[in-house]
Length: 114
View (cartoon, rainbow, N blue to C red):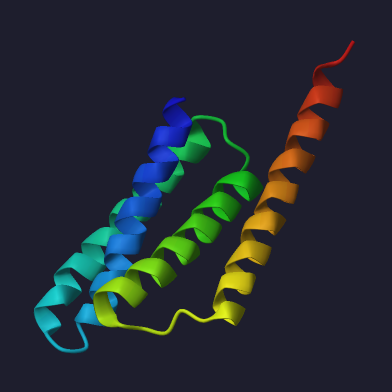
């Protein structure tokens, strides 16, 4: 449970950093939050890996949820486009990550079997 909370913290600060990057186009003061968000995200991601989550799963979930959340929030906050092809792309990314997660569980189950 701890590693998932750390992963969601990494996602939250990465999305904050990315949205701040968009905001910095109008006001450069947002760049402080960009740098802070990205550094904090990699710190939390490192903690996730130390907690034992496989890197493929951690990075995949981080990337997929981060991409989806950034697209949705950018549409809401900045009026960025959120079209059907974007939605399909997000669904495909999430489906791919689920396949990686399921694949890593299958390998872990086989390794633990007597």
